[in-house]
Image (cartoon, rainbow, N blue to C red; front, side):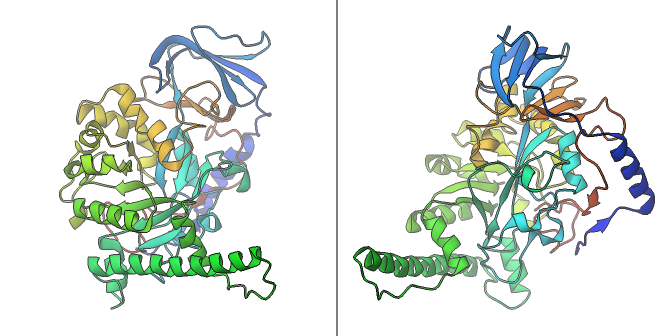
Length: 451
């Protein structure tokens, strides 16, 4: 179905506006704060009972049974509560509306998802209320080589630029398989087969190599003092592809089938770039040791299956089976609905494969952060990391768990005890882009549109 952005109905608008303006923005976050007496699920060094976390200037400054915080630190009593790192979604299309795909060409690497980002989309609020503090917002899957992602901290209510994750690595979205075939094949255009898909990809990198050679030759002449050297023209598409070959862009690939994982890895080795992660990756359990040896991670669904031909061999044990064979595994949403319950998706991993609680939680925190390239700053409760934290009413892997407070850089952005929507920084009217937030839902209509 073709989506269009619309503002919510007049009645809802009135309600949203009234509630939003009733909640004034919170004062700036305190310099020092201690969340105490919580069950702290650190992700990296176990679960600590009746523990405290000291936050100083937006960073985690201490974790343990006791912390050396100043006497005047703001105290937050979390007795009987659970504290985790913020949930991280490594594959989201929230707040990108129907602009998620530039489906006019199979190769569009110069497209920038920041240009489509709507920071007032209610999907961001819903994710925040589900404990999601960081999202990788990706281009859709209509293209063999799509556009460049944007990484956000879900500081809902702040300006667009204030929501950008500072200095996060750049990522680009590739897609193989049915989606590019369908989009361009329906137009009797290359590519319409898997053969065509990979030909388009290989030719694109050949073009990028030739472009780089021209610039290398020009720069060499300039370095030698040649004042008559002719400067090549700038081509934004080829510049982006050249950055892939230079290792300046993390390559994130929408890919389902085992045979295509192997083809994608072979092409990456041929042209000298690394694949950061396969996304969806529903057949990874078939070839996990081979992919693990290449250091490529996966961002997969917990248990979606059968919604397209490529998903018929999906099994809910895929994530844990792949993890046990050495693959770094994260879970992701690809859905404005599932993003609100990624903690429950992690909980399924205990059921399907026997993951430990720490392993399951890592799939929606630290492993997801690694895929984005921000695991040195978020994804676990460790001294020196950003204070992106979630207070839950009970064990977050329980289906009954509910988010009570969400802190980002030590600042409170969601508090379920507040009236209205629990937001602390948002004023005005939320936008409603509609749909499930799937990467190709403007191309197909199905019950599982995040495919």
